[in-house]
Amino acid sequence: MKKLSFLTFFLFCMHIVAHAQVVMPPEGSPLEGRWDMVLQLNGKALPSWLGVYHSGLKTLVGQFVGPGGSARPISEVFFENNTMHFAIPPQWEQSDKYLSIEGTLQGDSLVGTGTSSEGEHFTWIAHRAPRLHRDKPVVWGEPIRLFNGKDLSGWHAMGKNQWVVENGVLKSPHSGSNLVSDKKFNDLKLHLEFRYPAESNSGVYLRGRYEVQIIDSKGKEPAVGLFSAIYGFIAPSEMVAKLPGEWQSFDITLVGRMVTVIANGIKVICNREIPGITGGALDSNEGTPGPIYFQGDHGPIEFRNIAITPARE
Image (cartoon, rainbow, N blue to C red; front, side, top):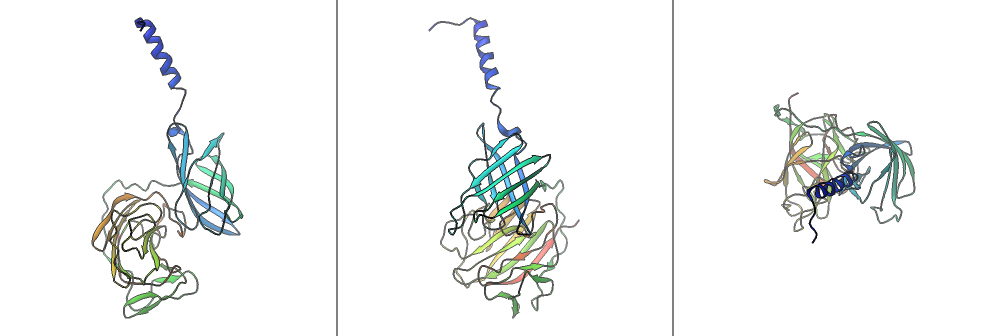
């Protein structure tokens, strides 16, 4: 092998460095980050969410949460000259069309149009999601009984009400409307007990935006769509669901985006960050307080002993 002089070797190395600098990683892409979206479809404002991240040196990938369903992976987000677009396959079996979205970056906002997997056209706008980082330790207030065990005081149904109270238990005997607390909260600690029949499905939404999944899951492997998960985003560390018909419990702490879930006395999510809203959220205004809400449109569910400890302002 021919030996290189020091000068030749130095120039060779500088040549490599110069060419290596040409390939810029997309960390500096202004599109990267989390976006709180609102879709305008058929006269309705529908909350959604978009996360854009880099993969390797040149590719942008992401996640998308629509008005319903779970967080969907985006294999590639195309971005050039402040214009972006992506497409993802349908989530539901009744459609064979892709969801497609395109938009333009305008400062700290994105504005665009899209076509749903059902073929419906919509417009949308998105703003950068807040970090929700807490600089100081939380000081907790006094616990509040969110359910008095007697009636629906402090709660309202999002439609025709099927919820009833019997013997200190809040019941949704069949699929119907979701139930929302009148009060809104920021950081919180929530305790609740619940019971469901076989194959039923419900959930509790924190600030009306982040669903902790309640679903018949005993004997299954942990997953982002099963018992005690942050729906679509965070799977529990283990499956601790009991048999249908048994009373179960959640103790949930939410500080900013950081969530801890204790299910049936076992910590299954420990101080994990929730990236964004989950499907079915009431809105995408992540920087504001929101209510507790119970999903009542997926099957029978019962709750009792609901108490919340809010953070002091």
